[in-house]
Length: 94
Image (cartoon, rainbow, N blue to C red; front, side, top):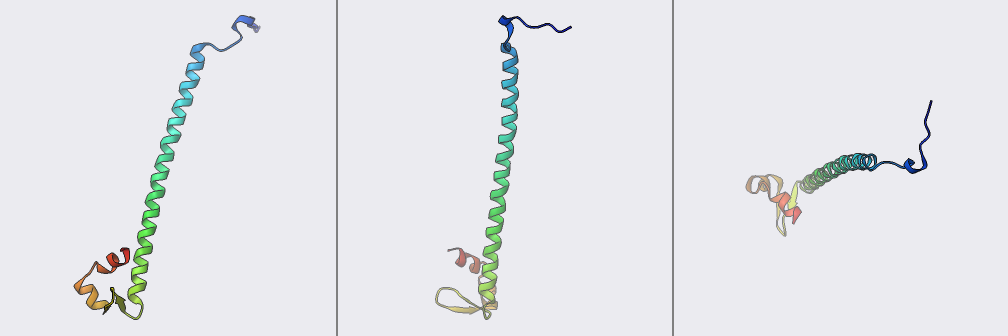
């Protein structure tokens, strides 16, 4: 019913080995592509969290007695926001 192979043909053929190597290469390329995509998403998430933390710090700095210290001169929230709307965040980032 089943034939036993001769001792000369006991190994794999070159074509069989090449097919297996090609399949492994394709699978590894798929895994590497997914890992780089996950790394990019993680970096984007970290940047979003950092921006959120900076904005929270700016709100806390302004809400501290409604006064923001911009390098020696104290100004109120309303005068700061009307004269220099983006200066609070730029001063904190410096």
